[in-house]
Length: 177
Image (cartoon, rainbow, N blue to C red; front, side):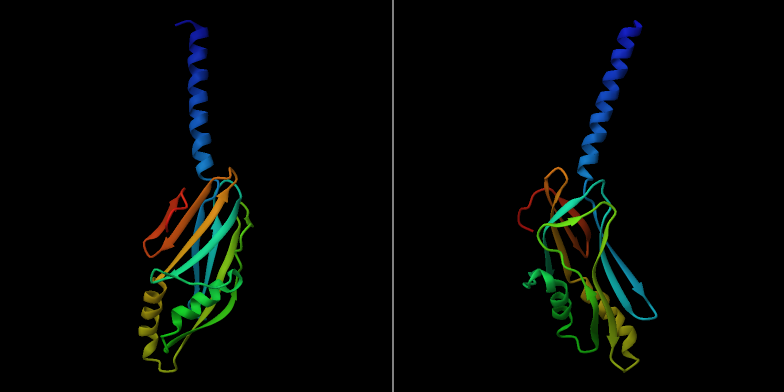
């Protein structure tokens, strides 16, 4: 094989590998991650949504479902109303909301940016025998929540991500969620 042919083959292989990496990179433009921080002493919980992808994204809509029923509320109070609705029937565990965020249409979400979704403190009834049962109940209650984020990546492709008790599911289409 002559040197010219060898150089051509190597250049072609490099171009193919570069194209593959470029395609993979575009799929990771926005990679949403839901994280939970818990302070055991204060019994407080902080939920964050982070963008761990290679680029920015634009949030189009955020939906919250409890037991597969959508929580209908204005975007600025969606997370507060969701938490109140979740705890409405439970008298032993009451949340004290310390803060929440607003994710409205057109909200920019930068690379490596984290936004607080909601920060709340768990208040348990004075009966100390309920603390263990209360914590177990809280975990069961939080598994009823499903968070769906609709967004566009830097290539203007539409995506949605669903966070539920089974983990995270990313999908390119905006079909029925």
